[in-house]
Length: 63
Image 1 (cartoon, rainbow, N blue to C red):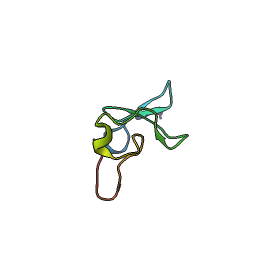
Image 2 (image 1 turned 30 degrees about the vertical axis):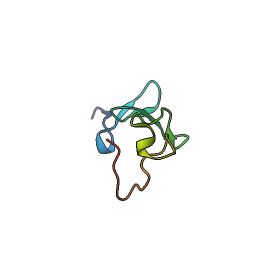
Image 3 (image 1 turned 60 degrees about the horizontal axis):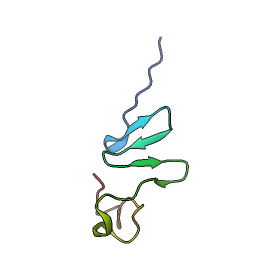
């Protein structure tokens, strides 16, 4: 049986095999450091930490 690698990840992420980063529509997430490597495009409206997933990940989403 031939192996197949799926590049689609949870919540619509796309895994880039060359960089090892996960692309989330507007910014890249690095699983090795556990955070986004680009600031949130919504700016301070999303909270004072521009690199977090959401102020409350249980109640908010990051498109």
